[in-house]
Image (cartoon, rainbow, N blue to C red):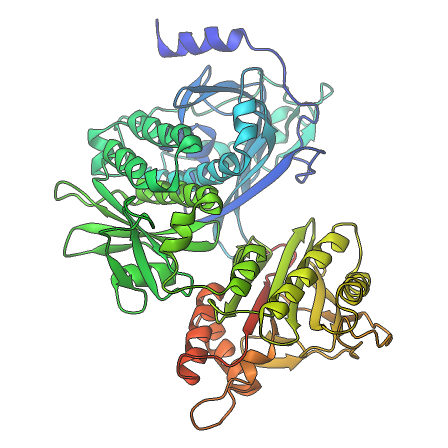
Length: 637
């Protein structure tokens, strides 16, 4: 029986959609209750729009993606087209619900049918921008449909993001490799078409070739070019030429399936098994220490799971360079490759891939394995003492133990905003704290500085953090949050302990920053990569003093690209051996220089903290905390 006939039989037994809001990815991405939205944008090479459009609608992108196998009844993606996507042992049936074909915009969206492990819709849109650049966007609005995916929610979402990035890489590779054969089908045969909704609720096409107003309903769309299965077994590397795409998909799927019951100590063995199956050779995992000075190898042996492992300096090695720049680098000596390991944008460490032969590791598969590694590390480290011991280079004070337990991840980023923070002395911190959270289109941010530098200070800062989150999650604004914090501190310490702070909300749609000043250092805004602007707001007095001063909610209008700096006095008042303070000017100049160099925010803060430590000869007299928020604009690419 032919592959196409088998697909027809499978699809013939499918039921209707497993969700109600069919077409939601075409209507601007409105997210129904209980669903999550994921949007990934990838830039393609200029001038490839026609080639990429042909690849996209012909399912060439899906077929070229390492984790995906496709069986389709007909050739091109069109409304009513039903398709089965296979991820390892999982079968994922879908139906195309809408398509758009314009001069500068081509794409489609499909929804899940009965038997799909997810419930929702995913769209793939290719767009030619006014400057000639080509952008590809994947939008997924979904929720798990089976219990096993709900049980490992963060891993599932991470795998979904990984798949979206792999789609983009596959489309980039296929569109670059495929020649244009005559007038490209998707763009030149259907002109000035637009998305509309048919009477059945499905989305189709309306344009000159539809008879001046006839809706092209599912199953009736004219197709002028048929999807063609690639004649080569792979376009993504010598290793995949030897081991098929299905082998790569099976290896990464097995890694995902084995991860829930694995411990941190078992990660090296899991990665080695997956790497060998993918044809990447042998793999070594290194994680960054708490102060981001060294990379330590995870061997899975000993109390810290690093016995017998190597330690590499971040500032003076190729591995460290890959970590700093977040870019994969080739090792000419070993024919290997250093690949950064991140959880989204939070840097965790690096992988070293060393093939058994002379061929270098395939970059796309290596990146997929690194992304899976980031998910594994993030899911295993909260309950692993071995991980905590491995990333520490010295003993930690009790106050610091409490503080680090409460801190959010040091870095978060999406298309519209990047938030990154750093705090020193990492092993003795006892009073400073930072917090941030995303709630819809709002970013909540705060920096606190509790009185003193001892365990009581650490307890005060911890109480401030807990009270802040508790009240904020009830919908309170910054002024109400600061009042609640003050009430908690007075009840607990009876005016004997207090904390200063800045509490702020940033509207991601408008760039309006609303904030209150509770006796703290004023925020600084870096604008145009060259200007430092100090924001002003009347202080209301430290929280816990009971001064009952009026609390003013002040506002600042940010511009796209602005960087907001919130910091404590340990940054600017650090004194060198000559008695000179680090100072506000030196602080802002440092950030401006690295901003102008397009340095990632997280790397800018790492270098700032190390410069500050060098200024004070490695020992800070006070806690030093800085939080940077970069707003990219309401519709940043």
